[in-house]
Length: 78
Image (cartoon, rainbow, N blue to C red):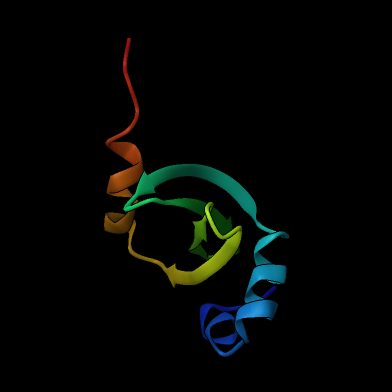
């Protein structure tokens, strides 16, 4: 099991590989990018994906549940 600190020390390529072992939770769109949220053991990772260039721009990890609000705001209740 990888810790947040270990994840942050990885290269962008290795971070992307690690994320695929996590659990996909949600996605959202912002400023022309798709941002996908994954859960890894004990932390979350956002994958910033540029659809036009078909390229991962950034991966950001965090533990704060406050950073989940942009995803929760998209939930539509019946």
